[in-house]
Image (tube, rainbow, N blue to C red; front, top):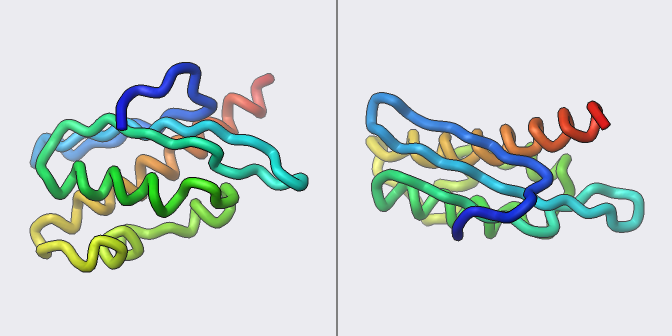
Length: 113
């Protein structure tokens, strides 16, 4: 948890209706010719469910390939937490979206080098 110094990618997402905001930071390393999430952290401003989903996304993504992490869905996050109340499902959506945005940001930076 917390801001990562010199991240390879950053994903910022939020929900203006409930006020939740997440920033997901990633470090990517190449292992055996495949890009892998080497480190991941988050800053979340919001409810307990938003913080829990942010934390869970770090558990689900760390050590996995970028391709595998792009397949993580909001339902995967909710399932890993053993369920969320229906009114809080948008929080798991933010966590998955934040991760996907961080990967997109990383790829854009890499392409522009």
